[in-house]
Picture 1 (cartoon, one colour):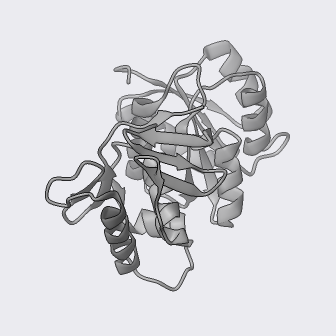
Picture 2 (picture 1 turned 60 degrees about the vertical axis):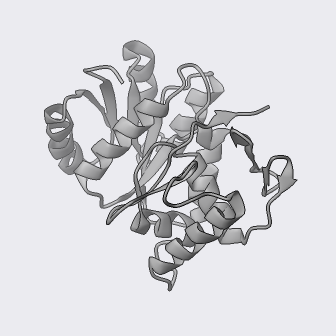
Length: 238
């Protein structure tokens, strides 16, 4: 990440941009504001920012349409979408269309800063984000997202659907500390009637399948009191 990364903040709510833009500036970023998707496209072309933070619901052109147009133009500037709490399928579609991450409104600005820094760290200039790739690999571990299958040393792993979804989320967010609450929201959904122990149970399932030692992990690292991190490098496979 550059020392002064340039963030294009796109939201039609002045109450948000008036507070968030100064906060991001204090966090060490250069910030430009746009008020809708159409203006975001113009600013992205003219200013070539390092990352866009873009609301989904906006007049003239919404955030997802602006995302689709940028990706159609082969512009792979990292994008974090700001969404209202919605269906997990809608979020998954946004990621498949090329978003790097999403954050539900209302959100903690400190969480947004952490997401921005994480996305900038794993960004591959000129290439689609990991979240848009169909096949990911980390050493002998491979995930085929289209087929919903995972392999270790070319042997298919037997995983429950939630464990597979958890593995997918961790692989698309490598080297990022992810809290149990965030995993619960991403994998089970914000209103799913389970607690964070469900996350721990599926992590334990993954570790057994991956033959990963929690005391000396190759893949999934526990950060005591905070959450989990996928510690190994991740790459896109054709």
